[in-house]
Length: 587
Image 1 (cartoon, rainbow, N blue to C red):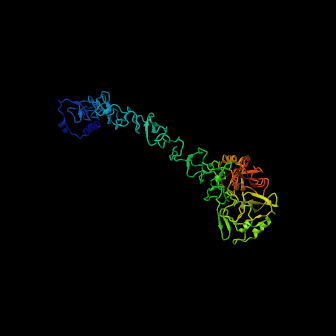
Image 2 (cartoon, rainbow, N blue to C red):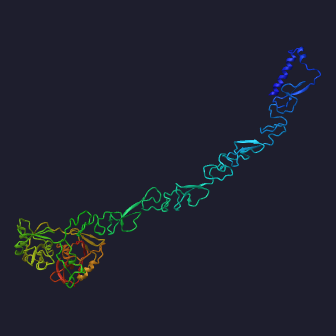
């Protein structure tokens, strides 16, 4: 730029001179002495003492802005001339044809890790402090980040390869060693550390039995880590008696099917020690709440006990050690209870509810059967006029098999040890009727024209038995009395053997079988049937004698039996062989 200005100045001077702006007088004044030497001067626009050979002028003295040198090869830059010190400016300062010779580029190394910042550099002939020749640092503020660093897991590109945390995987702590990791405790590593796994689905890393692959068990814990506790768990109740109903106080909770056969899902058993006791069971005469409704033996007609209180062996000896499980041992049935109104001479059976005539006529009226029926129907006694002749089963309820001559409770004051009429006609002969001989308590069939004593009764009639048979178990249940009867086979044996047979019988899931007493055996006698004289619901029947467990009180080596040809019962030697039908309940 300076060269251009100098050139323009020279041209302007010559132009003005040629146009006469300068007079000769003036020229004369300024003309150098003719004896001075004229020289060529070169424009030095950049003032570096070196002129531009392309712009010159001659004069006898040094014009301003001119120098005698003409070796400047860039008269616009005072830093460029021959012999100038070379600068790191991308220019050939000394004109030797090289640019920035002896200079090197250095990069700032702020973090001192030996790797320079490519964005911050300088040129120098020697390495400045804080600078390096390398320019590969990708973070010059952190000495742990450079191309020579080892990659660690810190979300940074530690080795400046353009990738972050390359080669690292996440591993989860497996404290319990079950192969499943804790999602809340993890680390990153290039290889799996000891005690760590790649899985992160453990919901309890302190228990090896708890993990997504575990089987759920009932323990109040989410064993399989599915978010649910004890899912699929079912509470089962122990069914100790095998009746299909469980004990609500004894249970276990499992997942899946119950582990043992004595567990059920039902928990409504009110007595899990008896297979006869459960909701809906038939009420039995056993002094238990069989159907779990809160009532005991409801809607049953309890048979009265026979009155026998001692046990006897086959020889008639009294047994007190419990070795003979006969009528005297069990004393099954409702306790006998009577009350006597002496003002009316009426005896009330508190067990059956029947009221009995006990005036002097009860031992004096000796008439035939038709008259006996009429006598009772027409009788007015004690303010009652609804008297009737008792049925054979009603008359049998006041027989006391523990007594002899008469075989009746002493509350009755007007008694003869003889035959008393019943209203029951013999099913095989309408001209005959049943009576009971109160010397022994046995019954008999006699012609209706015979004359016997009469004892009238009043009150609700005893209900008839109602039977049902379980063909699978081969048992018959009397739904009226609550007794359960064996009906699977017919066997014949001596009396003591019959007792032992029943005691050892296992039938229908029960083992509390026994030989029935005479009142129980009489309860299944059907006085409308003959040969056999028993309800047809019984399938295994012999039309012959069946043992009872009741000993004849006069001759104790004998026992009562019932002949199911016609239902006549009598006493026979205990060493005879007769049929056996066991019974249970009713104790």
